[in-house]
Structure formats: structure tokens, C-alpha cells
Amino acid sequence: MAEKETPKYVLHIRSGRPAAASTEESAERWQKLVERRTLRSREELMPVALQLVQDQAVVRQFRAVHGSENEELASQFIDQIERSARAIDPVVTHAGAATITVILMEMLTSSGEDSDGNR
Image (cartoon, rainbow, N blue to C red):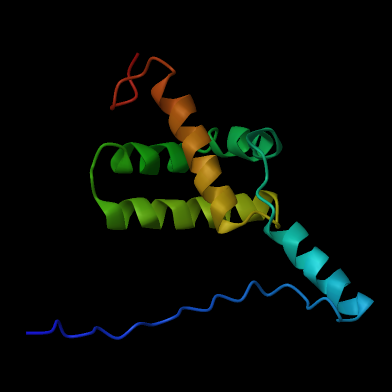
């Protein structure tokens, strides 16, 4: 008995880059898009994190989320960090907020405090 031939599919992923024959204007738009999507370094985001770590509401919310294994609560926390960070620096992205969250986690868990904020 011959094996049944399975259909083959081809997935085409477009890069969104302008075609080689496109105008200079298209190339400029692409460059602006790339610049906007560039991730900011930890050093660039550190001043925002330093301001946020002084906010006791942020610290309390972090303590509620840290170690809870509650993905929904963690997602809400990152969204809150994004909103708070944008109040300080309007160009913070969601990815930037995640980086700031990691910085906060490192600051708050390496400070020698326990989960209740006691030293």
C-alpha cells in the first residue's frame, strides 16, 4: 500500500523592508521604524527604575506579585509599571517596562529584605 502523500505548505514571511527599487522616502520610513523598535539599554532605563523603586505603592505591589506564581497579577504589575514609567519617560515601551520590572526585582530582592520588607 502506498503511503498517503501529505500536502506541503509554504509560509511566506514578509520583512516589511522596502523593496530594492523603492523610493528614498520608503527607506527613511523603514529606518524610523527600526529606530523606534530598538530596545533601550538597562543603563538608559535605570533612572526610571530608581524613581519607581522609591514609590511605596510600587514596592507593595511588587511584594504581592513576587513569588506568587500568579501570571495574571504579574502581567497587571508590568502594565502598571509601564503606565508609571511613561509618566516619568513618555517613550517607555512595553518591552522597556519589562526591563524596568527586572531591574526593580533585582533591586528589591538583593537589598537584604525579606518578603515582608524587614531586614
